[in-house]
Length: 219
Image (cartoon, rainbow, N blue to C red; front, top):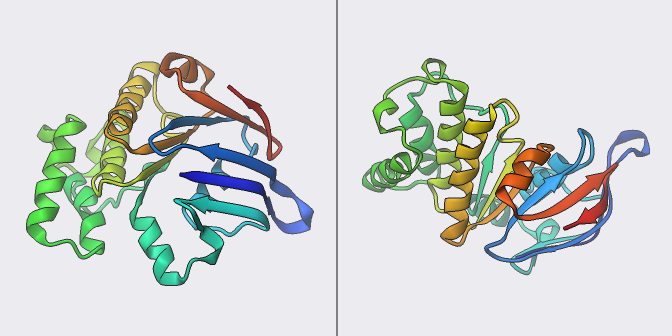
């Protein structure tokens, strides 16, 4: 599903965010990326979203080299990926229901399908009673559940999550991880970047450790 070959990303002044990373992630796998801040976790996720391009090496998703995609193909690829940010990134002027439905509206999905799929994912995250609330009215845990719902509403092939529990207590963190596990059980490939070793031990999935942009551990 996801393959990297000697993948590197270099920023200004020769600073490597990723260096010579070779990995293979199976379709339907749940994988943790771990490492300290600056280890390269977020950079790898951005490369997978085509938000940035690698400096060296090859990155493939579904057998396609991402750096070879046309702009139209990049947009198609992004429609198959759900992304969860640590800081939620909800639109404050929209209700949380509108925040989730907005993804499909941008993609040109008809209104009836928008509403049906949003109601489905809303039920899955257990926030039916808060659909008409605005982001500022919700707790941090509720906002993160909205962010997860937004990532899942379009039935993505891949979900990428960048420190999705970094601002949450352990109980809420487990709730968020359970949402990812449920999506994974339906066949979605899930990559979660986190430095929360307690959470990794509780969930129990394959782990790839990064340090200064290099793979230092696979377990």
